[in-house]
Image (cartoon, rainbow, N blue to C red; front, side, top):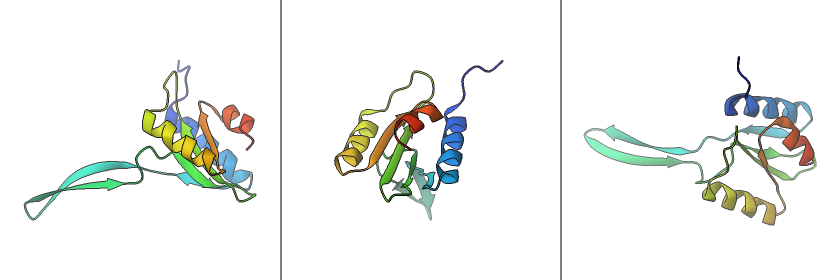
Length: 107
């Protein structure tokens, strides 16, 4: 029997909730890949280092950034710096372990 929701399941629940309640939010993918083309290796980074799992705009126009974690995981230093930066600029920045964390965060 599974007792803990996965990060992916928590993200899906949060996205459904936010979008059903009038916010515009989506999953933000970040990372890097090494690819080879015509014999040359290339490194590509996509997204901003530390960017949140979920981003968007609240129904009243504020930026939303939510870092989703499962279990006892904590945000990395880059993720925390990103969230702090968004808060400093007037955005809503939350670390969420469940949907209730988003609701308690004012969304």
